[in-house]
Image (cartoon, rainbow, N blue to C red; front, side, top):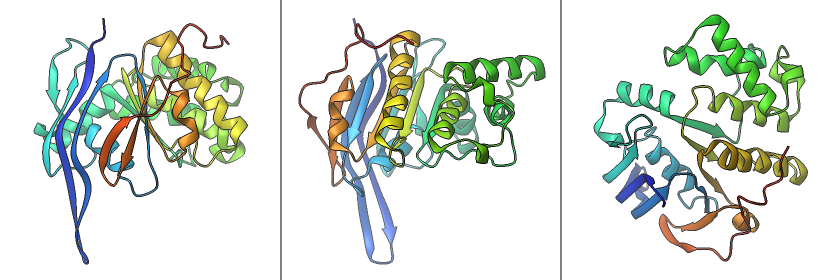
Length: 247
């Protein structure tokens, strides 16, 4: 039995520009089930990042509604009915965000970068937070680099640290914006392995956007976004929870 965890209803987003209004999303309806690894595939400018920003509440929608089930009681919460401050606090506790550009703070060590979201969400306890950060570094197989600065590890390793940071507050949902876009194919495959294990072993729900049409079969379900409109699923998925390689 599947349980929906995210629902978008008639979501529209229009940006005002010097050249006139630009419609980024058009009447998007989407239901995401708990435990899915959902891929949103589309060309540059299709509205993929905007769609994620509607789900995580980083940007305001023009019209429509976004509902996300609370982790504790399962009640549907209207993301855009909250104040900006309340939304930021909710996002920090309930949703992990992974960016293509990693966005690690260069002056902090890897373990300190991972501890940061705990501090922002008022979940910071010096000993416990550090232990949690080290556990997450172990999850992404980088515990031996805990005290290094980001500049001293590779791009693929930085992305794994970014994933660990997104998991700091144990969110049920992760949204990933082109997390493999700047990585070589081998390193990108390692990132996919991490995501697959988060879905299979921890029951996380992951929504990832990508411009690479060849990745569609790696998801449990994939959809295409074109000119702001969400289209049907793409082909047959090769994602199978029973065959994900164990570490």
